[in-house]
Amino acid sequence: ITPETETSHWYFWGMARHFKPNDTELTERIRKNQVERFAQDLGVLEAQQQNLSNHPDRRLLMLNIDSGGVQARRMIERLVQEEQKELA
Image (cartoon, rainbow, N blue to C red; front, top):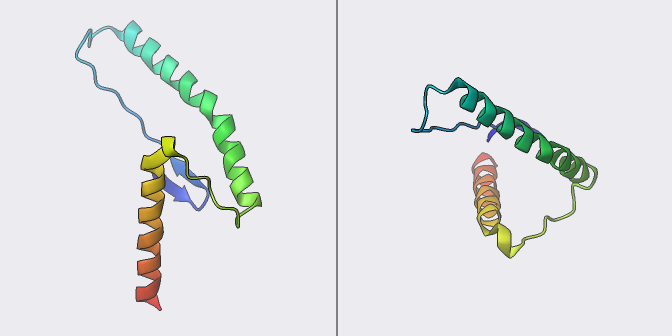
């Protein structure tokens, strides 16, 4: 995931495979299936971003199943605070 703006990002995805590397039909089928899977998430992600934009003061839920994301957000928040202190 690479940030683009304050409310958007680029999501780069790739896959390496060691089986049937010359099977172009299989390659196209895998690519098509992955595009469809990511497209299923797009509506939900856009709605979540709209909700965050509409309610910037709300805190995100910190669920146990998302411990990696929670830890990443905490690290980013800490780094932003440190950077703001240095700039002040």
